[in-house]
Image (cartoon, rainbow, N blue to C red; front, side, top):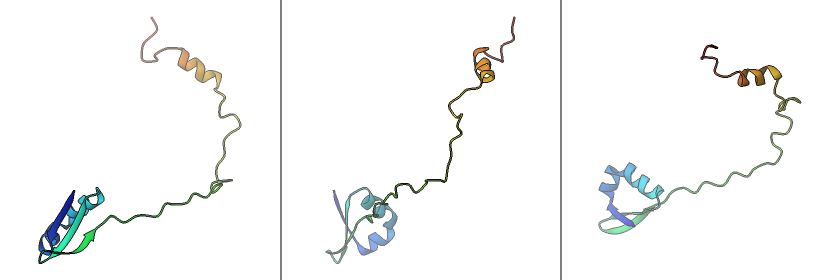
Length: 85
């Protein structure tokens, strides 16, 4: 979809026109009925990943996948909010 507005209307509706341009609409600004500018969204350059950038900045405990027996017992015991009858 294409929208053409005059300069005065573009000044008063700039925020709305910017939203339309970001959504992919063709927004043309005209002076005395003659197109003079087009609003287009800025194309941001893709951020290049640097493999290994976090190397050495984090750690995992050697026992991270071991569950303590006490914790397993707590989960197996049932709902602690319910009194044992």
